[in-house]
Image (cartoon, rainbow, N blue to C red):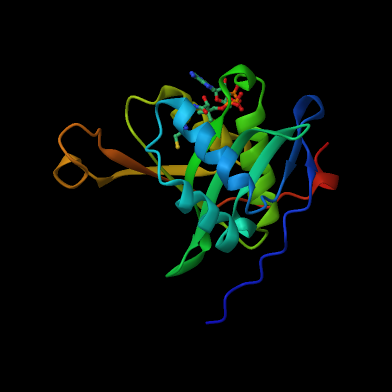
Length: 180
Ligand SMILES: CC(C)(COP(=O)(O)OP(=O)(O)OC[C@H]1O[C@@H](n2cnc3c(N)ncnc32)[C@H](O)[C@@H]1OP(=O)(O)O)[C@@H](O)C(=O)NCCC(=O)NCCS
C-alpha cells in the first residue's frame, strides 16, 4: 500500500501570539534542551532530535514565542498502520504550561496529518499532566481511549515506570461549518 501523503504543517495560530509550525532541523537543538529541562522525559541524544526533524518533521510540530522554542511534539506514522499517528514526546516549557499550548500543539499536529484516524501515545502512570492532556484530546474529538501496557519494567529497567499505551480513536474529522 502506498504511504498516504502528508502535507507540510503550515504555521497555525497558537494561544497568545505563539506560533505553532513544522520544525526545522536546527529546532532539534532547542527541543533536546527543552526535553532535558522537563526532568520528566527520557532525554535522547541531541543527534536523535536533529535526525528526527530531518526525517519526521511532517509528523512533528514546534511552538515558538519569537525565536524561542517553548514547546514541541515529536511523532511518526506507524509503519504497519499508516493512519495511526504515534506521539513520541510532548513538552511545554514550564513557564508556558497550563495555557492550552500542549492541547493546541496536539490539535495542530493532528490537523496537519489529515488522513490519520487514530493517535497513540505512551504515558507513565505517575504523569497526571500527560494523562490529562491526552484524555482532553480524546474528549474534544469524541473518541474512545483504549489503555494497555506496552512496555513494563522488565524491558524498561526496574527504575522505570511502565509505559501505558493510550490508543485514541477513531477520531472524527469534523467540518467546522457543522458546529453550531
Ligand atoms: C504534559 C504537558 C505537555 C502539558 O502541557 P500544557 O501546555 O500545560 O497542557 P494544556 O494547558 O494544553 O492542558 C491540556 C489539558 O490537560 C490538563 N492538564 C495539563 N497539565 C495538567 C496537570 N499537571 N495536572 C492535571 N491536568 C493537567 C489541562 O487542564 C487541560 O485539560 P482541559 O482541556 O480538560 O482543561 C506539560 O505539562 C509538560 O511539558 N510536562 C513535562 C513533559 C511531559 O510530561 N510530557 C508528556 C509525556 S510524553
